[in-house]
Image (cartoon, rainbow, N blue to C red; front, side):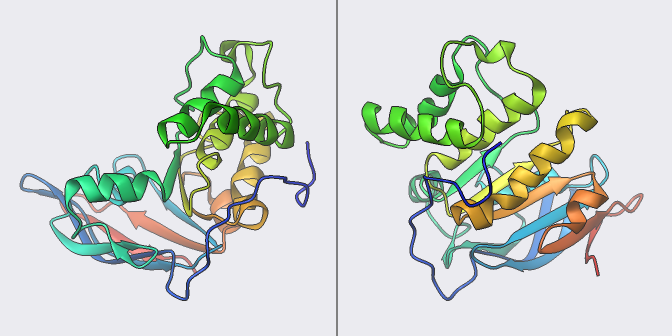
Length: 242
């Protein structure tokens, strides 16, 4: 695998004095059921944070709210100083498409495509030219030690698939990468490899990282860590991990 300082493709955004992500007193409810309340934290530019919690505690709902897929009942979310809650829908979609990327637990890749094609799709949807997309995908996959062409994605190992998913998230040069259980579907052989990769994103590519995980050891290696505590009959409680 390529060394940490060898990445040829770095994010080229201008760092700002404001935090990359601020979540202030966020409450998320579905109907009459409040699933998450009191979420309050700051993620600096170029830093990583982890969120721990049991299944169903509201961790994925937090990521969905940041992506504009869920409307919070109250509170605010700002990304690079812009409130995504107060934006109109079209403006929010355009802003987030060029600012935030996602790494899913199971990769969400198209098995019938080659790894390079899976990565290129994200770049093309973001408006990059086909040549630029192909070149950037080849660079990223080479850096992440994954064969780009001549093999279908379905024939990759679990660790290779997740590295392709990371490359796809990075190709749009996001300021913020969200990772939803990126090691959750991997065996021990690949868990540390992919976990280390996700946590290296701020240093190697300059993007901030917010990662949801069940793995306390992985969470402890992030710059900051939080826990969502499920309380029976009540909304989940948010707390910082010392």
